Image (cartoon, rainbow, N blue to C red; front, side, top):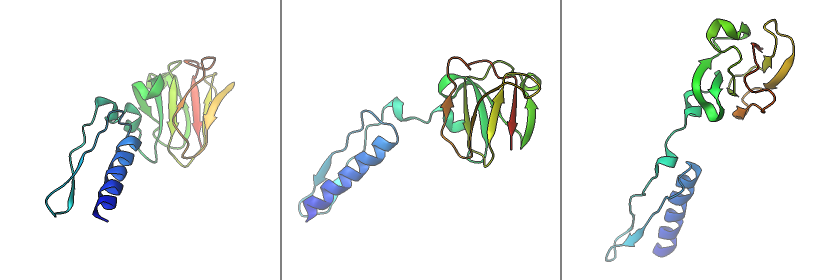
Length: 142
C-alpha cells in the first residue's frame, strides 16, 4: 500500500509540474526504513517560469506588441471604445488576451471600422494572424 501511495504521489507531482510547463521535471521517491514515502525536490527548468502572458490578470483585457504575450503590454482601462494611437499601440498589436467579461474587438480604422479580429469573454490568449498583425488602430470592449 505504501508503494502505491508513493507512486501516486510522485505521479501527482509530475502531473502538476507538467501542467506548469516544466519539460525537465523529475521526482524521486524514497522510502525510509519503515517510515513514510518521501518525495524528493523537483528540478525545475527555466521553461516553467511564468510567461509574460501572466502579466494580464483575470478580469483584464490586454494587448501585446509582440506574439506570445511579449513586448509592450497595454491593459484596456475599462469597457468602452479606444483609439490605440492615444496609448502608443497604433498598428502594434500582435497578440491579445481577453480575460474580461466583455467582448473585445480590434479594428483597422481609428474610427472603429474595418473589423479585424476579436475575442469573447474569458477567452484564451491569442496571437493575431499574420494578415492582421500590427494593423489594429482602435478597439472596443463591451
